[in-house]
Length: 568
Image 1 (cartoon, rainbow, N blue to C red):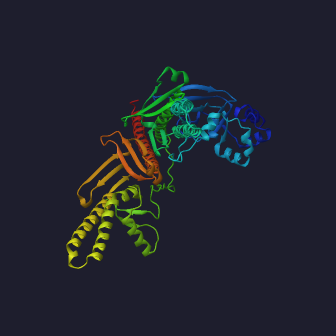
Image 2 (image 1 turned 180 degrees about the horizontal axis):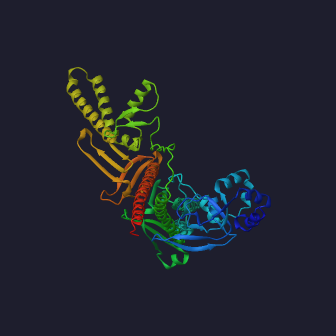
Image 3 (image 1 turned 90 degrees about the vertical axis):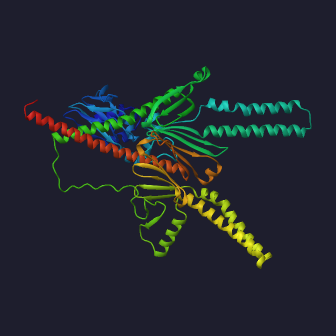
């Protein structure tokens, strides 16, 4: 115990922890002894333990683009490994392997967090690196998923803000100069000065708010430009998946920008006609390095998964596990297969078939009628999600035909009260014809709105546009694997107030971009599509693992057969 206490005191993280707390922390460590080389953590795989090397030797390895591991450094007794894993739930940045005969003390994150929860005062004495705290307490945005972490958040440089303030400041100086040189009553001069303050101050405030609401974010999954314009209340979320990024370019437009350390980072993917631009940010080279590092991490996750599949396949062939007939695997429920959800006919996705769950007959009938007349903006049947356009779009589309119906009806009542008798027949026929045309127009617009739907399945994104009466149907779809970027555009004040907008899905195929127009809660739609893509990639990785296992099993079986036949 005393040896462990001495070693913990030499670790920078625990160097200022009181002896009483240090003894309690030492009790949380587990001693591990290795008779042969073992991995303490693998690059790209989750890691939730901190290690303290008490004896022997350990080494750190990086996985190269060629799939080979290269020695990065060696650890001697007393070295601490993976302190950041106590605070961050991230894949390991590199692999660490303990040599045979090594003695290691390990601390699980769960035990450490439980101790900190019971003894929060210890946080004041822990020497946690600033970058680790910044990543742990990083800002969260509404469009981020639960397992997404912001590793870089920035706004435009302060120098960019100063540049945008030149115009309002120049206007203020010009108006103050006018007030100084013109002759007039004191009231006129005061009015000019007040006008200078109000206009320039308001303009400067808008510039500051636009600067403050323009964010450039790098997460462990994607690079995002989130912009909110105050004047138009327009919100755009432009993003690129890390796996899809092909080129990162830095542009420093002038010697002044170079001297101030300001530049623009252009992020290009295969599916974009233009690139995402992190404009006028401080230290663009540091941002590029962070982005490149996380792109490499995302690539290494897949590569490490392949290596793990190969390792498992070889282990199963050389050391096959014992059969346990009592064990049975349960398949996890598919997304959306929960009680109380609306079940839809996939061939006719705009018609409700049945309501799962218990309800009274009259309430069920009312729910069916309401769903048939005004479907909820989002419906789900198992893995198939269907979105409708916002009801505000329906109101806008049916406003004129509704006016025609109302005016023709009121005109009919008015003419009946004024004229009456036989003289009204001709006018009544005309008004009735107008009313019927208005009703047809209204129903046409309603059915046109109801038939424009957007769907997402386990494998595809689908944009369906039908005209009423079956006159025309256009169906565009793209596989989830082809999706390069998912962007959100909330174009105006009304869209911001009523929370609707466009979701632009950029693909690398011939389909081109798919636009989910005027959907409710576009950022939620974007997040759901993003989550489904990640689920699809996880399924594909498992399928690839299984295929790789089978391939390696065949290789090992053939090797053993050739060895038994004496060919090797």
